Image (cartoon, rainbow, N blue to C red):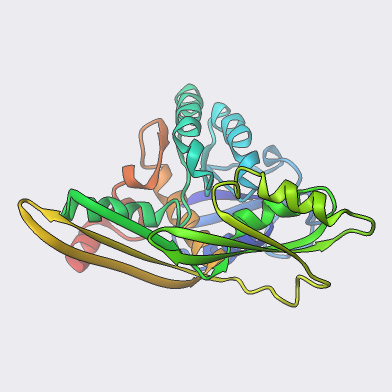
Length: 294
């Protein structure tokens, strides 16, 4: 029975907590959080530092993406495996290399960018390319709430609360609709400019709207429609698609739990989901899984 710790207890941390409750092969050793009070959860210890827990095999990092590289590197160097849902696509390879060095130094493993995109959608894209090596894949997100983008906006000075919605425009293009509840005295113009110039938003069409209450708009639903048109061998016009409509935190939390199961089976180093054998993500013995799924 592997022992896992949840580090951070926002929407994702809570979803991981729920998903772990359905597992037969992962034990929740405790939650590391500055927002939860010790003793606030009857069934699990709540601590301020991971070393306040007796023993941890893997830390499931549920912190904002910009905090993940430093947090993961520190734990890996101490020999604690990590999994995370880092979602800044443009820097994934660089963070991968950083965590790879830290994991090898600590003789443990890390699975990074293990959400649904990047994450399981990355695996689907890889399978599409295996089926049709030449061609184009379009990934259309939403409509739905982007948790990563929302967290970024909430951290901008002057923002009391925020919601970032992703609206698909087709062919992989998206519009960002950002709804902000401002703090008293905050400048909407300054907040709007800061959002539009942030790396999370600068490459997309972004609209910022001030609202009296963000909570009145919030919906955790999201989804993706992925399409590929390509060539298998010399046969053209091969078409394939993948569609899902999901609760964003619940699916991310479930993938993190599956990754926690897989990470201790890897050699020291850092991995993304396309580098992990799918069978390692699943609960159960190898023979039963092969008989049932192949």
